[in-house]
Length: 105
Image (tube, rainbow, N blue to C red; front, side):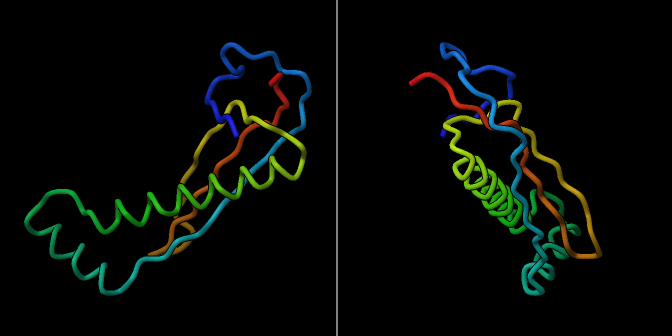
């Protein structure tokens, strides 16, 4: 699956527009990792536990978006975007979305 943030796929012709696709997940913090992260805020620096959690969430959201595009017969997604929102204390939502298309092979 080709995924671009642009409205076209460089070097390819879009043959068919398949429509809006999306994928999302809500991730909550692990209490053990939350304690470690709290300690890191005292000394400063990157909170690797949260970085890892958010990377995993992004990959899940993108994977679900790709599944949606595959179900529509697409072989590419253009205009892909990611959004994050806090849905409650200690939980974040990640949404990946874009437009599914079929490009020349």
